[in-house]
Length: 405
Image (cartoon, rainbow, N blue to C red):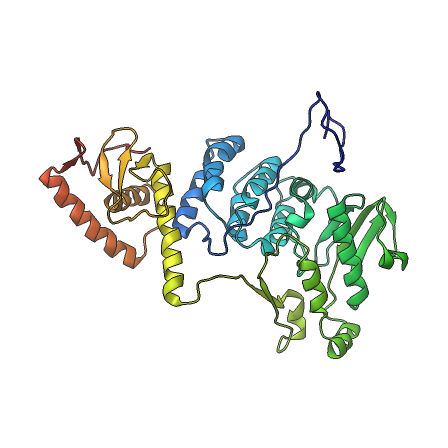
């Protein structure tokens, strides 16, 4: 809004010398195709911190979640778990908006988050929803706010259009979404539009909309893919599943990035009663890494960075790598405690801090392989401590209570 009133950017607006303009800036740059989401153990810690009943939702957003959204990446499923950690509807909205630009599988984002927010409900009472249910605007209040802040084309996946739509047709992005729904309704068999209204009045899709969707009005419609009717089965046997139409519109959304390969998996061998829940598409993202060795290196790269950032959040500073984490070698890197000033080898420090976090219930039990590594590093650390090794004039301590916390 501008000065508290609704405002629509037209591209020719001259910025006035006074007044208050409020808006969300939404980054359209997507995570690297090689980016890895937050590891299970660090996600465990994040959820443990968010579960703290002694702090408010506002404190959780500012002090717990925000540092992660600046540095880490998430899957849609992880965002869903994060959303459930907040009690207040407005805090859940803020959490979704904060996480959005760090989601590595944006093609799954809107449908999963929409169902989750609807399930939680504004009253905190959980609901169970079926694919063909038509929810009220009040029950979809949270997701409507999310969409108004992020924009439909930043979240929406036309490959999976079976959701509730509330579209202002004078908004360019929302008008494009409406054009897609019209195209799908024309191409795909069955009663695809359900509960449709325009400006609050019951509505039947007219043929004039096929030529051009009007630039005014408020459209409400629930899109439903009919998988089970005889009309659908006959249509598929003759014309396939019209997948190319959905792909065409998918490439106009910001879920799509150049080079993505979208594959039609079809419904071959799928039982009729399972078609409604069957996902008939897969996405392969472009990458220069094609070998198992290369993929392992990429995984190692992201895990290394997550470990360094985790230690930094515990209150340790990486020495000698102010320019970035890209060339950090964990075997030789050193970190300094911001509170005591002591300097410790990174791997020994990581082993010690993870053990402390595990003992406090902040991290899950390590895997068997990790346990073996930790025992080896622990023995090495104890030997160094006994010899009283010091670096940069500071004694190494492997058991200083409260370091980094």
